Length: 459
Image (cartoon, rainbow, N blue to C red; front, side, top):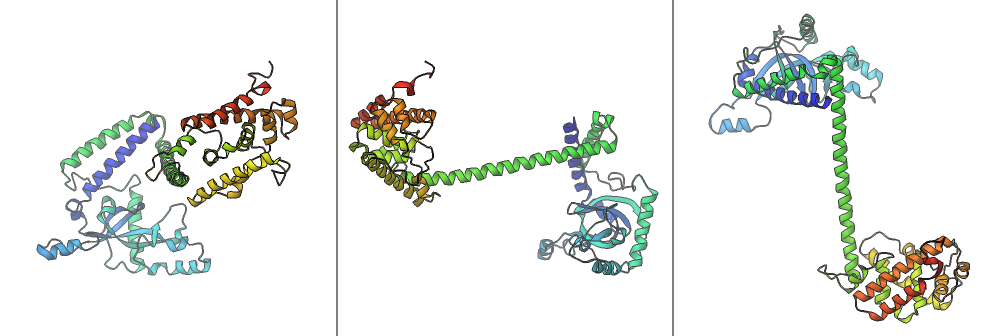
């Protein structure tokens, strides 16, 4: 219900803006601006300055002339119709907290000497917030689009309003009018007084009346006072604005993420081209087809191991032990992880490190942020001896003594390793390397035994 009322208020506001735009046309409003003294309510840059008094009305000269002179006059910057109006305001200088109190007091004493105002230097007076000593009355030059309402009341304007007493007397007259009309200063009727008889205005006026009737019969209007209804609608409007801001920020965040991902994608494409997974046209090559089969470990490093022939010279047990370095992720306390390894395990591990460095350098060359030593340091040989022994047929109890981990960690690592070996077998089959396929299949058979691959530990 609040949303429905808010939508109707927004529609009514939009209709009233369109009506005011028609009323402000020179042919309608111009005749009532010829003589000074008329009270006019205006808004400048979205800030409402309230009621003011018309001082003068000017039209740019030469705009009605025919030929080049008229075109030049119309093309010059600035509005064609301007209005000088005296408004109540406060100098923005007093909002500056860096100015000391003594300087502000001196400015207050000299404030009456200033008679010309502008939006840049003056803001509206805020009742109940600003000190009344800061109030001054200055003459602003505005356009017809700044006029909000035109009163039927005209005041006497002194011949010279530059001195402060003349402006103060005019301000007193304006305050007296507002005091005499507590329900609102009488306005000019657009149809009867201003002769606004366009078809567009008539349609807008009818729609405005229909919306006002619907609003008056709405449940919110019936159940709350006018002030309460206004507060409810204002709070709903703020909530809606905040939700719109959230939506905008969310969209900006998604677009930024998309930009980051697109850049990362470009970098990874360069890495694939650099390592030979795809050609210059982006067509997938043999290396790329092999990498597609692997997702348990770093496919770039595993494929490099395959294509430089590291697995060809290793036994099945050595191959399984080497692959465990890509799976095992427990931290090792020793500074030298290879310390204590036999040569038949350490030498393959060194080759694995060389392959990892090759991949890391390729990624760095393609502008991917990466620490080469950290990347290579993730290779963990802590389970090589245990995996080698397991593939040789050792019992799980004896294998566990070769590790510094819990039994669950060992079992989980062996299961993941077997999954990687199966993927490598599929990759070798995809590229037609039957020798490697046979080696990986044999390795899978060696690993799948005993308690590690039981469907339940309670059986």
